[in-house]
Length: 169
Image (cartoon, rainbow, N blue to C red):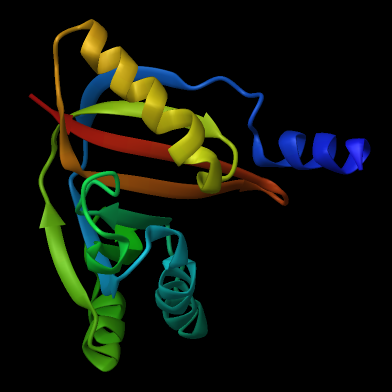
C-alpha cells in the first residue's frame, strides 16, 4: 500500500515544484465545448474536442480547460467551464472541423498573466498550484480574477506539463 501511494505521488508530479512568473501569453484561438458542473468532470469534454481534430488528421497543439468560476464560492452544479483545443491561429482545416462539429470559438488576445507551471497531472492543481498562487498573490497585494485557463501539453509518453494562466489585478 505504501509503495502504491508513493507511485501515485510520483506519477502525478506532486513532489515537483510549482514555478511562477508574470508575462504575456497568447494570442490564442480557443475551440471548445461548454461544460456545466464540477470541474473535475471536464476531461471527457476536452477529449471529445481533441478526438474530433485527430480524426481529421489535425493536431490539437494544446488541450485546455477554462474555468469561469471560483469553486470555493460557487455551488459545484453551477460551475461553468470550457474544454477543448487552443490554437495559435486558424486554418481552413481547423475552421472546417469547427463548423462540422458546432464548436464554439473564442479569440484570446495577447495579454499579461501570472503564469504557474507544473510538470505533472492537472488533477493536483487544486491541491498544489492554486493555494501556492493564492499565497503568492496575497504576499504581493494582488488578487486573481475568477477565470483561469489551464493549458495541457504532453511532453513525453507519460509526461504532462500544465501551464496555469491567472489574470490578476
